[in-house]
Image 1 (cartoon, helix red, strand yellow):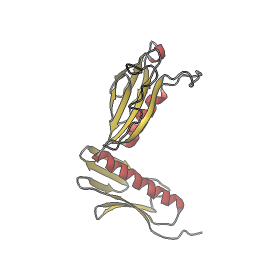
Image 2 (cartoon, helix red, strand yellow):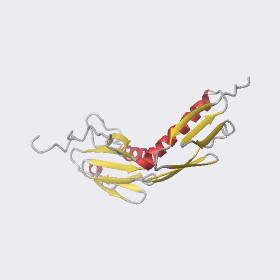
Image 3 (cartoon, helix red, strand yellow):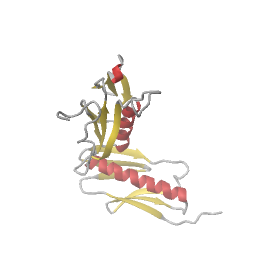
Image 4 (spheres, helix red, strand yellow):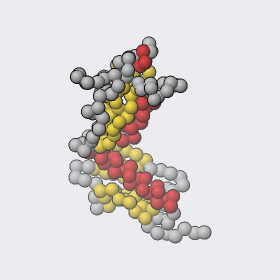
Length: 206
């Protein structure tokens, strides 16, 4: 069965102050906060999908009426929108630091994030830092910022993951670093846990 040749498009508007270039299937986005590039090459769809700049808009176009091609086109456009957001506003992820008896301390190295004194352990637990993100940490919160949404999210996930406690019951053993908020790094970012005192860190008078 021959697929119908029907154009299917998804668009990402390019705002003032942002430069988007396309070279083959590679997209370059430059803005106030930095530069990003991403290649959208897939051997299954390369002949059926086109990306281009048209009238200050980024266009991803599928040339065949096929659900997989439509999904790929939508994915490309969504990634480019996130790239534009990244170079204009950036992304942020926050983790709450929770402990009962052993306060944690943190060390940020070029490619790894170290958690010290987790549940009283002598050694440090290490999480891989992905890409060019910035990490700030204190005794109650870890904040990760950057222009690449995937790098920010994966770094936060890596930190949360290394706080596993094995077979201990999470209902009673609550120590760890937990993702509590993520989104665009602007005035709309809200961490609803900012005013909640985690276990082991109650505010004075409570």
